[in-house]
Figure 1 (tube, rainbow, N blue to C red):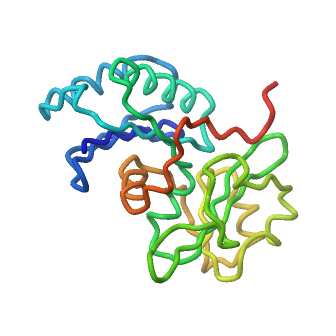
Figure 2: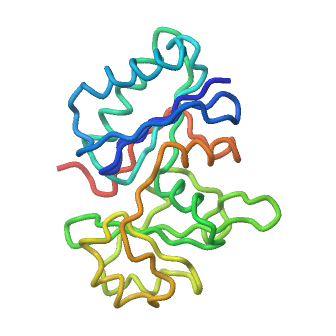
Length: 223
């Protein structure tokens, strides 16, 4: 099965192409994940370089964020358009979940800047027996906004499970907040961004993680 994964939720948009469990190619774009259409032309060129016709893609996966509003929305719209002629299924995965899955730690809390004087956070843990990614309470992630909590900075420390590794996609903006809320030894002291490969690895390890008919993860009502 050829699976194409694209994530444009972060400041380092990327794609990965898997054939069954083998990574065929990956690519990372530079610059903000804007709605500019040039990346679609680059995608076409990459597929051509590896002799992968578009109609051979049997599954599309999109990173759902949280992250860039424009990047996620434009990416999902583009994937749905690519999938439409062949009625290829389109799935989504929370980009934050893929960040947690890619780390070696058994317990991970991912924190980001939700704006409007709020942070978003979500805590995951990996089951020892299966390596499957769960929420901190043991429930199955929905890969929707329901998995996440919006909090004030002063409340963040109360939501981080004991011993959890803490990472942020927005380290530059949140360094002071995270340093005061967490033990220094548990923090990753630089921004951690998702990769399409990490999303693919999560999807391959646990097909139940895939959300059919996905929607971008927005944590505030639209204004």
